Image (cartoon, rainbow, N blue to C red):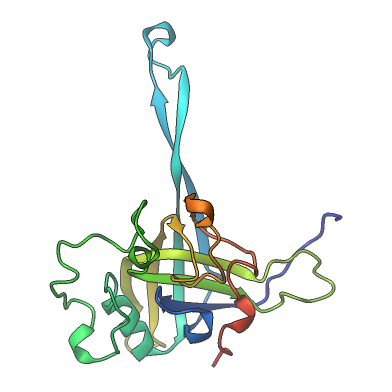
Length: 220
């Protein structure tokens, strides 16, 4: 495939509790600017006297990602339900009890939504996933453009009312993504990563066979 210039088109943002598949996702909206995704590789130095102060080797320690969104076209109720429900074992309905700043016994002091290695599929279903869907995916002139990015495990790192008052309201939302064992129990299309008892963590995927981007609800 030849090198080419890609345009993803507007990026539509979806979230859902891990107990739900893509067809039941919540559509959050679109951003003022394109979403910013930063993937960080973790390395630990190996020091030895033969190398002095410089590491003689590096140990790979995993990957995380930060997703920064500047939302100015969004559904307020759905957004508040998302940021207020993080860490919940179940997908609780949107209501005033679970707004940002209100925490309960299933959140305070509890583990985050990151799946527990070695656990059952049911233990990988706490928290939320995020999907970024590309509008121009499938365009015949953009050969190889993926349908989007699916992050199977995310949590809110920062939430800010970036602009209020007489101007249009704008929300700055920063998410952190961590690797997750994916299966049909937590939003994936099948049990990839759970084959023959072998666990594989995924930070994100673009594969339709793993996450069915085509069954996400229509943008509204």
